[in-house]
Amino acid sequence: MIKYDPKSLKAEEFINDAEILETLRFADEHKNDMEYISSVIEKAKLRKGLSHREASVLLACEDEEKIKEIYDLAEQIKKDFYGNRIVMFAPLYLSNYCVNGCLYCPYHLKNKHIARKKLTQQEVANEVVALQDMGHKRLAIEAGEDPVNNPIEYILECIKTIYSIKHKNGAIRRVNVNIAATTVDNYRKLKEAGIGTYILFQETYHKESYEYLHPTGPKHNYAYHTEAMDRAMQGGIDDVGLGVLFGLDKYRYEFAGLLMHAEHLEAVHGVGPHTISLPRVKHADDIDPDDFDNSISDEVFCKIAACIRIAVPYTGMIISTRENPQVREQIIRLGVSQISGGSRTSVGGYCEEERPHDTEQFDVSDNRTLDEVVNWLMSAGYIPSFCTACYREGRTGDRFMSLCKSGQIQNCCHPNALMTLKEFLMDYASADTREKGEALIEKELANIGSDKVREIVKERLVKIENGERDFRF
Image 1 (cartoon, rainbow, N blue to C red):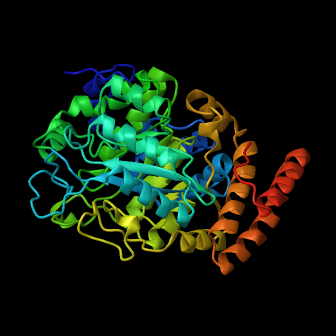
Image 2: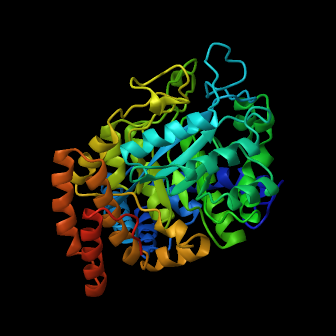
Image 3: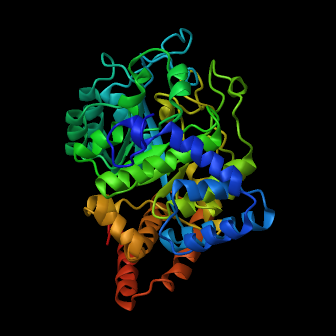
């Protein structure tokens, strides 16, 4: 039997099937043990996180009173680490050419009726201008895996183009990258290109299911894919983002695997995941989510989010426009700290007046504009943040984590959120959004702990009003 070892660099040792199955058995045995569950919740209150086994017991628990405790704690931990800020971003699809045969993605090689498209550098520039005109400062670029159409050189050229575009007061200040698993050398090139976080969804941690769902193409290689984050870190990328596609396999198995991956990164590199994303299988072109019999309810989805938040308290949690506004509202409260807004999941979609569907990777369930999403967040008591300061100030990897775990990151993030929100209000917001935003900023100034910092922020807000941009702590 393969031995479980979180410090191993072999996928089947740090994501160990026997350990996950034993964890699920343990969770079933203890899910009604209120004394044990109370002790785990008490441990979670220390804000040091939980093991995959402890968190799995909380996920299995069905006691309504304990679930409420878990939700309340998740909400409080989220506030402790991230305050009431929600970071905004948008995906940018560069190409849907792909050589893989993934059964859940319409970009799969055998799909002959989807329109294939790859952006030229001029089209990338046009998309960036459209995104800047919405108010975005942070992008996550996406592309199918195709060594001929989408080689690393193409991705690097696109990143260079994105960073080069300055339109009116707009600028993309952080580019995160969500592309296929690659080599240490290629990760080094991405690092040198100035990327923020490298994001790669595992899709499923269950090896047998993984190989079934990826029947052809380089993505079929479970170990190569699962070990990608280690290669990324070896290549100098110190902020990586995990995620599984919930609905492909049993959610409790995926949950345990996801936390084991986080534990592995911490054990080997001293830095856990910068982000954890929470996507669910959605309808797209020739993909029907009903074909997958592991779909999860909104209630279970929210429970997963709450348990991740208290198990990995320092990580940023991401929810996309795959989810409708009602689910997004629920799940933000339970731990999500980053959301997309005004997203289009088609190649070249931002330049189209009407939302195109012919090249979409998945159906978007939240079709509101970025301005509408910002307005909604502020009405719910959140600060929409367009901050990218940590990445540009070198607060990444273990430096970011130490600041985050100690709570000191708030001293930077809260003022930066207010200043970047002010930029959005001045340059892009509707009249109603601007009015709400100005009132929110005025109110939140009082929550800046340092008198000196508060005065600096006030001075900079006036400068932003007068046309200056890009202040940061």
